Length: 77
Image (tube, one colour):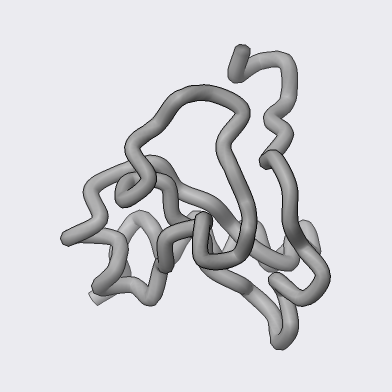
C-alpha cells in the first residue's frame, strides 16, 4: 500500500531534494523513518514542539553537513 507520504517523497526525489522535513505527529511519521530534526542540529524558523519537527534523508548522506535553520518559501510565511 502506498501512503500519501510516499508519493510526496517520490516527487521530492524527482526534484533532487536531499531530504524532506515534516511537521506532524511523531507517532505516525516515525513509522516512515522520520527522525527529530534537533538530532541533526537543525531548527525550525518558528516555535514548534521538538518532537513534532522531523526529517528524513532521501539520498545517501542527504543530511551530511546539513545544520542550521530550515528555510521555507515565502508562501509558507
